[in-house]
Amino acid sequence: MPIALTLLRLCLIPVIIFTLFLQHWQLAFRLLLIAVATDFLDGFLARKLNQATKIGALLDHLSDKILIISLFITFLLIPVSVPTWLLVLVLVKETVMLALVGILVRRKHIVMITPLAIGKVAMAMQMLFALWVIASQVWSLPLHAWVIWAVTLFVVLSILFYGMVGWQLLQRKS
Image 1 (spheres, rainbow, N blue to C red):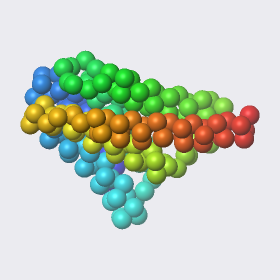
Image 2 (image 1 turned 120 degrees about the horizontal axis):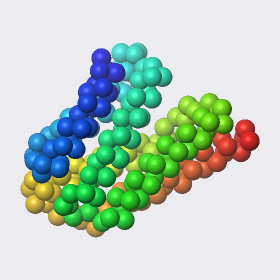
Image 3 (image 1 turned 30 degrees about the vertical axis):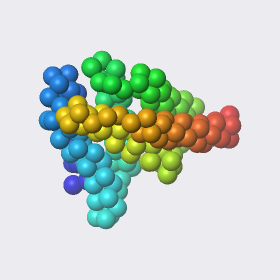
């Protein structure tokens, strides 16, 4: 069951992106809300039902990355009032994270980095930010500066903390 929720989230990604390009904001908001709910529920159920697997955890993290990267690239391409620098910062963060894992795998490091609390908060902030951006199109909500800076803070902190973990792993087995 938990892995089915992760797969549902993966399947929702192209549909969400398509609805955003069509500017069907309300439908995109609802679909993203479902995707965010599956992100919470899959991990919760995996632990509760004792069905946590390595492949499930990998798919969960990968689907989060694909969803965020897809959303933020789409925000660069469609008319939304989001600072370009923030979108680029998030895309750089996610790309660097994937590249770091790739480097560690290539160097034959065991890559089972337990998600850091700051990383979970940063991902949650990015998801909530994406919901807010879409909601602002549906209900004409303002995009407050404090929201932008809060997301920025957690993204930067997550880059720093994961960078330190990655650096330590690279130094340990160099």
